[in-house]
Structures are given as structure tokens and as C-alpha cells.
Length: 298
Image (cartoon, rainbow, N blue to C red; front, side, top):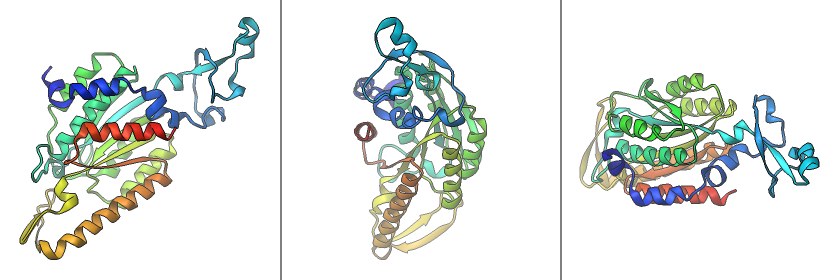
């Protein structure tokens, strides 16, 4: 399949297949605390039993099952067996930028999305795709069946940038779509109104959704590797500005670092995973490092 060969390296597929998403990536953190509360007002349905394991809340032991079998079992709920994921990709014009890397920011995000969709489907969790610029656009409804991966990859190969962005408004539209607690995997350069974006993220978290933000910047947007007089062009507004690279470089790099630190702090307070990336980092290596780092926290 061309799409798989282009966006999903075989060696990455082999690696992430060995990672248990439910136990090692997001879900353990997502479900932490839910066992102790009776799901804080969220409706869940009993699914089946599973053997009691270290770390399970003793209050969840089914004593009727113990009386019949002499073994400890806990009830397994639908919220444990189904995690619905949404890949959300920014299609604003700025995502088409690359200075000297092979992949644009959009290409890089597509690679991440392909790998994450493969991972979730391997774990039999429903995953879907939404895209946005000033509003939500093309979507693939969440499914967990094997045919979902070709459907998502097919849509990914068709993505093209267009226009400006309204990240906060698009997140609001996405929130209105969601009927159950979901995992939102956002891929964007976050070149948007920061205050409104953070407000929209807080609303999503308040509704109980788990969020991972992959903040994708071009290598040049992080390192500012220019020299001499440089004309900077805003890809979404067309606004132009001449700067002297020697004068502007240090201040620019400092502002980018401050932005990343600020977003990391705000996201940490909201219990959102913030993953700063740039296109000089091999996407497969960056994703594996994130997954393993996440696993180490639980």
C-alpha cells in the first residue's frame, strides 16, 4: 500500500506494535482516579470480569464471583475496553512551510497521525480523523476494525493546506461532536490566538477528554538559521517584514523557547500532554521517545 510505505515506516510499525497502548501510553493515566470514584457522573456499562491485579482498587472486587470461584475478579467496564481517539490535524496555510527539511509541517503531522492510527487499531480502539483550518473539515468517523487504517491513510494522502486558522473555534466544534470521553491527538503549529486556544483546551478537559498536543514547528522556526537581511512573510495573512538576522535571531529564539515553556506549563496544569517537535527530528524516533516517556510515568 503506497500510503503505508510513505507515511508508516515498517520498523516503526514493528516497534509500536509491541507497546500496549492501554497499559503503557495514555489510558492508564486517563483512567487513573476513575476506579475510586464511581466514574463521577459518567455513564458506563458493565462489560465483563477480569482477574484482580496489583494496583486495582479492592472495592472493585466482585465478591459474588469470588464466592463461586475462590478467585479474585474485578468488573471490567466499557470505559476500560473502549478508548475513542480523534486525530485532529491543522490544515492552515502555515502548515505547508519547510525551509530545508524534506517534510513540511503538514507532512510531518501526517506521518505522526498514520503511526498513531496504526497503534490504536492494533489495540482495537476506535480512532477517527478530523481536520481544520477556520472550521472543522474532512472527517473519518471513529472505527476499530482493520479496514479503518486504509480509510484513514487514504484521507491523509489527500490533505492540502488552505487559508487561515481558528484553532479555538475548531476545538469548540469538535467538543460539540463528542458524545463520550475521548482522546484528542492534536497536531498543529499552534500559530493562533494563544488565550483563546488555552480557553478551548480547558473546556475540553473540563468535559473529561484526554488531550495530547503535538506542537509541530519547522526546524527553521525553532533555530532561525538565517543570515543577512531576511524578509519574513506570514503565510496566512501575507504580511511582510524585513529584519536583520544577526539582530533578530537571538531574540527570536528566546521568544520561541518562552512560548514552549509557557505552553508546557499551562498544559501541565490542565493535565494535557504537550509534545514540542520540529521537523529536523525523525518523526518515528520522536514518537517512540514520547511513548516510552509516557509509559515511564505510570
